[in-house]
Length: 67
Image (cartoon, rainbow, N blue to C red):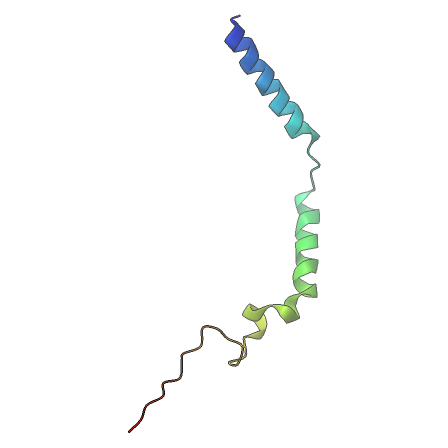
């Protein structure tokens, strides 16, 4: 083996060890947590509750015209 190949393999092993050490959560648990978060915060979600016209920064600007 050449020196560069050994260095490459060391980096691969280091990366694999790092990935193996990451704490993982089951998809079912993550989905349950996400659902609970959404239910707890649904009253603050403007996509569900709407935005009042007084606080909406994207409302159409009122035009002032003089006759």
